[in-house]
Image 1 (cartoon, rainbow, N blue to C red):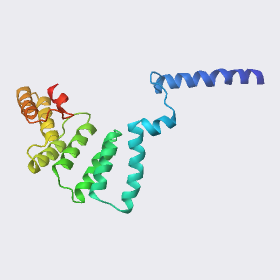
Image 2 (image 1 turned 45 degrees about the horizontal axis):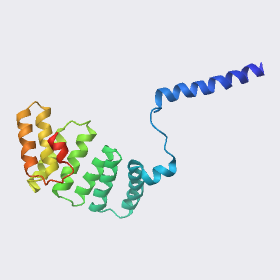
Image 3 (image 1 turned 45 degrees about the vertical axis):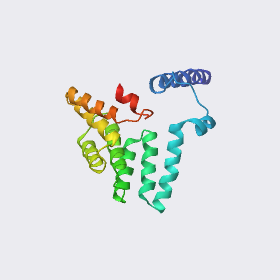
Image 4 (image 1 turned 90 degrees about the vertical axis):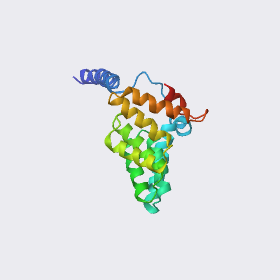
Length: 176
């Protein structure tokens, strides 16, 4: 009986693990050692840096610190936390077009790519502070496209393209 139980465990545990990993894991992704991720994986680095910065900000809050924290959360795809950090930066006095635009983008990402009303409000505030704010203009075009106003969306993006410097990192996306 003992031998049967041992044999059953020896078969069931590895088989169950393989089935669970196949269903829940990512068998197609290559493994990365922890030491490699610490030095090279931007998402991992952003998560680690965000945790350290968040602890520092509890002791000494600042608008610039929360803006940086929002960028780290955004880079690590923690959009809900990025939204909260952007809101905190605004509450602490950062009223720039950039922070409003970053808040709007984080809201868009949080809502799965949909330009939600909260994002439109943030983009509007960004454009009130700087009418040439590229990110806000891009997302206004996206909002038009999402509601079916494709001609208006293309017009917004073409206007944005005309005013964008040749080496801007977002220019390729605008052209697409």
